Image (cartoon, rainbow, N blue to C red; front, side, top):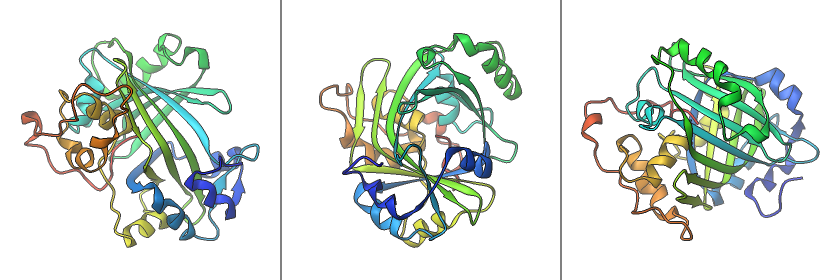
Length: 287
């Protein structure tokens, strides 16, 4: 069952799909991601506009699941900076734990040859989620494909937690996710919570889904946001944030957890290193 009081309770009218079937039909390890930020109150209206053939992931009667991702970076944040500068060789490393099932994966995301996201992952022990030691050879093998140079040293940098519901869209063999109850915490203990915001992400092949078109028809466009990089920039005002300036100003400034505030409000001001970069494309980056 879906936790009461969440906007995803409206998903109860959709037919269920199991995890094995969803994975078989729409694994999409190489894909195009489009991300949208919506006020939480709009999610039920979005759900009512879905196609009647759409399905929702259901496991043991549950349709919303708790996620925890721990991101790893170098001391000088090379992964973050490659993303901020839109470099083709950018990558992300994280462990993802499905808190309701206890399953965990080590994941490495890289940029595909045509701009899509390529995700490779390895089954992982939940007790190892805060260390890369057991999976280091896997990471080095993936990063060799993007030519990052000598082996890099990584440490936990940011933890994200949220509640996710996943839709299967048969018309395009694609998926969409709805993330709510958004929380971030960096390695210095600074926290950010955005309880009134939802992140919608479509994960498709080269063709946009009808969920994308539905969002477009209601005035929503893909935004530049990365749970890792945008969250880290929101918590640390010293980091370059030009790529996410509009997103930070519109959605993140008031979200700092008062119990563990960031040192100062997020600073989305210009970064001289980025002024010569092109504008963000419609594909809104990696999660």
